Length: 157
Image 1: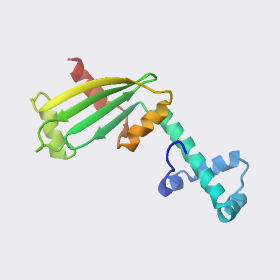
Image 2: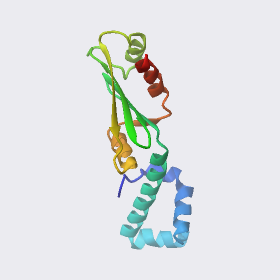
Image 3: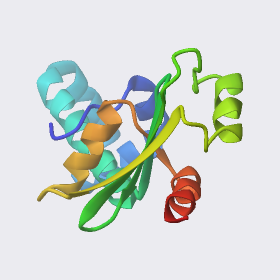
Image 4: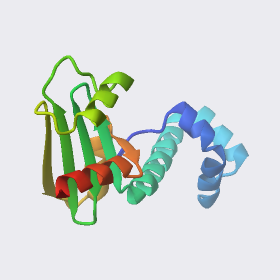
């Protein structure tokens, strides 16, 4: 597998897509039941291939990622050639920006000496989607980029 197997819940939500996937391989419902019962290793491989196809489709569309921890926010913009990072670090252990109160504190105190904003750019490797998937495995979430763009304007100033 290139990425990760979809969870049972994800597979259930994508039931129709999985049926279509099997149909593209000329596997009928009857044959699928037989494969699951008599060739579980083949069934597992089919689920793995389907999972990778789904991940590939999702990752192809990713433009922004966010990762929050207690004192840091990592905001990523993914282009065809680079991964651009805006990192926000709060140098005050009493502030937890994963909480509503801590996040509000950050919003009100962006120019506080305890708040540092860093930027970085890294070239995409030969496998863009693998780079993105690695960030997701580390806890990043796919977003529309509103927060990245907000901080990009602040960094420009």
